[in-house]
Image (cartoon, rainbow over the protein chains, first blue to last red):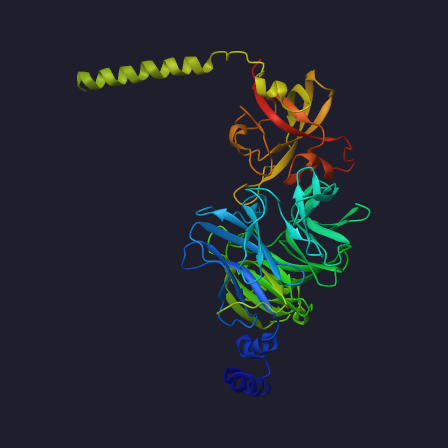
Length: 345
Length: 161
């Protein structure tokens, strides 16, 4: 245990005992200590190169380590392979504006070791759209206009194709490979979370109306995603985007975290399913067009939680907690592994 | 008033009236045919835009296709008759500049969508195979939604009769 924690934790516990309702900030040291050995988070951020680069950080917020340092490219949207040994990401020409919704259609797909070395450009601009690791780490799933393709990373061979059933972005296979999640069209409505069964090809809605950026829980049974419910007062009636979770069959929909002053994106569950990672952005979209947004870690056991004043949201969710959050640097599209990633400081 | 001022006012008046006369005159008929609309897509029709249900949402953050109702006046290629539900990608943009990663190649010379206008359309019959975007279809929310196919507008030209 570091000196920082050896002092902070007892002090925090003492304060918790003395003050019945302690401000969230006083819990941060406890949460940080919990997270200290919980692997690594990889994310994209703008740094001193004035371009988007890739970084890894411990989930307790210890100083970030840089994976890329390029001045000619914008690197974004990294994801660890299932065993944590590699990452894939997209690389755009310098000064490209990375669209928060269309990034998967553009840039070059790059695969590297998880410390950023041995980077290999796999495809040309726009090839391998929405590439994401399949559970075996040897294939990626891609989302094309004509359907979903499973492609060998080594040979580029297409080993399987299937209809995309209205999914148009953010396609991700479940850890067990039984389903895909994605953002798709349902019953005349755009922007819904859907699941597609990889055996039968059947698709089912999970959350209909203004939802996107789904990600799987490690159990392959639940999803976390962003959703902006209708009829909100926040942001002059536009509404605030909240973090939600649901079972893959669409049951059990529940608010995870919301704050009427912010849009919550980048939802990602820790590999043990105990914590949730997300970004809080003042502007809708998650911030990829600018500098990203601060990342936060929260215990999933504290869901549903509401931040800030958020009077309207608290009224809708009277049982919601004021969950302690641990703030991390600004970033975009973070991804989490418990693998031992060795990156030189 | 100086003579120069009177001259300028008279000139502005003359050209203004002339411009109004030109604007009010009958537009040159145009059947909307061009090499793109004649070759793109598997279906080509001349059709009247008879309904746009609701209002186009803003497109500053989210691009989408919007389903509109057309009545076929003439079929030039392929098979399509009667009422068609057609998805137009990013309808707040001029057709000539609407194409992007989500739409693939689309185009035409229509600059805005107004009920009553007549368009020459190159279409594909299954929008899901072409459009990589959110598709807003207000007709699917009706009590008895149509199970007719949703067409994808590949090329959309203005027709002046």
